[in-house]
Image (cartoon, rainbow, N blue to C red):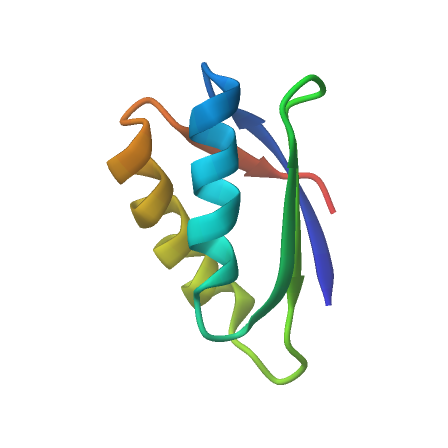
Length: 74
């Protein structure tokens, strides 16, 4: 299942780190951040609890940039 989020992140390097950390989370098959458009696309494994995993994503991303925000678009 693919979900797209509108995010707010201040630096491209932080966005890259967030992308890499997200890919390490169990239940994620792929993750991609477009820094210019501030979009975060996450592919969740089938049968995964995407809402629970999303909370983990936000927690990891806030360790990198404490002002990180994300709103689900689709």
